[in-house]
Amino acid sequence: MHYRIALFGILFGLGWIGCKTKESKDEPKKIAIVVSTLNNPWFVFLAQKAESKAKQLGYESKIFDSQNNTAQETDHFDNAIASGYDAILFNPTDADGSIVNVKNAAAAGVPVFCMDREVNANGAATSQILSDSYSGCVAIGKYFVETLNKKGKYVEILGMVGDNNTWNRSKGFHSVVDFYPGLKMVAQQSADFDRNKAMEVMESILQAHPDIDGVFCGNDAMAMGAYQALVAAGKADRVKVFGFDGAEDVVKSIRDGKIMATGMQFPEVMAQTAATFADEYFKGKRDFPGKMPVAVELVKKDNVENYAAYGEKE
Amino acid sequence: MPKPIRYLLFAVVFALLAYNSVYFRKLDEVKAGAAAFDAAGYAEDFWGKKLIPGLSKAVDLNALTAQLKTEKDKAFEQYSHALGIGNIRYFLVKGQGIVADVSENEVSVKLIGAGEGAGNVRIATEYIFGNAVRDASGAIDINAFTNSMDFNNVSAEINELIREKVVPPFKSKVKKGDRVTFHGAIELNREHLQLNNIEIIPVSLQIEQP
Image 1: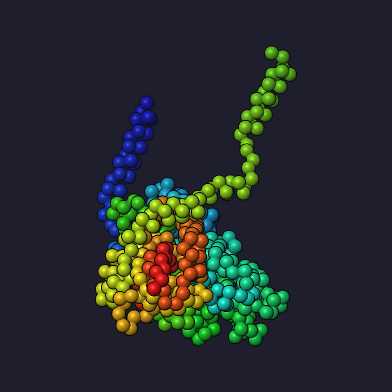
Image 2: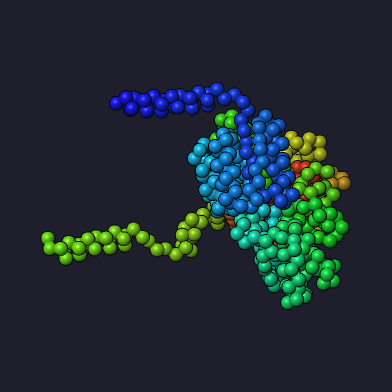
């Protein structure tokens, strides 16, 4: 009996201390920024913009690098939840593999706001703020058809086949281009969003199809790789290359007439929206859109002067 | 009860339980079940119940461009819509003009009452793509969609309706000098506003022969 009373007392005491600690917390709320990789300048930019917006709104924040590894990402989530972070601004490593982390955070009462990449689970994240890749590629597709004058042979170089963005971009592009039977896709291959791989893929495609008129690439790094292969083969003047992202070297190449067009994404808008949503969540708002698309803008020779890399203002 | 019968009974019960606990279905069927959203039906419904009745709210294109030149932010605030966030916004517009040129991909129109020096607008007849018509009316709520591909497909189906219903009767008759009354949607970039190259995705087109 004494043992039971002692146990009850200890449990009650712990509970009381717990309540007390939560109650007496008046330091600023903390926001964790978990990013897929900091090896790519695009994601560094995204993370930094999220961090600075969180700080500007008066919150403590810290960036965690998942190094493209879901296990590492899980560790970051566990740490963030255990260390009392109040919200997570999240750039997932894997659309499927990251779902469990988002669900764990939600179960612990920590809202998650996805930036740029999505998880394949409706309602798991509080909101997902994503580039409207599909619509951006509809615009690129339309410009592609116009510049090739509705006929010719073309190649599509895809990003990572497991990534949703790869297929949203490809579907957007084809939703326009497939209307025109005069445009024939002679090859469609993945180069994993990687510049060197795209160069190799383009080199081997050119062996089989030396007479192509256009190349559509799922990101700008691959567009630069494909362009390099075309230069080496002496075909850069004849083959029109299209990318997606709004990376610095492609914006410059559009200016120089080497690349035809790209879809400009706005990582700053996504990062700032995610931080603002977290702020609104803390203030009691709960009805966030499941997915919030961020417009992608077509950048081509006649409007490139308006744009700098990553959609930053000149 | 003799032991063999008891075992047999257990075996039957076990087999029944096991059989009823496991189901085999083709993955294609499961995926098709999850993606049961009928974009074509949604687009038809939107066209008949929201878009066409809502055309009365379209802003006069001359008045809009005049306001955009003097008070851009107010004009965007008052008349533009978009399902997402960013610089690209859509307007539901109306107007009247005289056909200046008919080409393979578009009909160029000089707006009546646009004033001297105003450029022509282009009515698209070939490249009917994008989200302009879906978003311009502001009648679709993004929260009604759980899957982003669903609202992409809604745009594609609305554009298909335009290609089927609006463009063919117009394109077959229109010629230079015709007076045209139009309702449609336009896309403008709030940050990099360009008013000299406006493209109208048509929703309703009427030709009045002079």
